[in-house]
Length: 321
Image: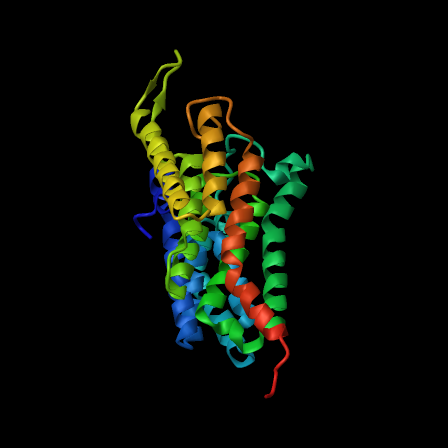
């Protein structure tokens, strides 16, 4: 996971180590759930929430799929942990830390407009939708999944799939979009493949596209238009495109066609020629909402595989020979 460039984006791009901490604690909570330690899961989720608020999209599905006799323990442990950390801060700041604890410290506008911003709704309404809609959607998906598959919802790959899809809702309703926002989803996609026994080529392709779109390689652009440090960024584009081309050529000799690889190559080549990467030096990048749709649809599709498979198996009639 650490070798995946999207995983490094929180450190390289804007220095947000709290995102990595929150993701790690969430995975530790997931491990506790798998071991049946729901109190420890609640403690870890509470600690993760004090680091980053998107952890609510992990807490909501776990709360829904928890056995009825463990749900209260999980909730109380999470609330108690948050209160233990938050109350001293609230007392020391006369309550001024409440906003930072609940919704974060603020928003920094990204380079472009997301899908939600494109609706041109009013500012306060946008904020409410951005914060509440992902949690509501995650709860709805989790309730449907639990009713659909029953106890199988606590399976490792199913839980990872459910959490990954819940994190996708954050990206649907974001007011701004940065590369490091995709880090938790990328980590869960890697973990999902490892759990299922093989790394999918389409997962690697998705991680590569996130890397190219948001460019974790730092460079500088001066007022006179000259740039410094573009070599590594251009090098990684050429390297990724070359690898994809060679794989497609190799497939043609077998013969076989991996359509996801062909589609990736066409899109990446078009963006390379048109200078459509968001954090490249060009000011003609493709719209943020375009990349948001591309990465969300493909990422959600990769994450949904275990959930869809479990749902189909449950819907099949039992045949008695």
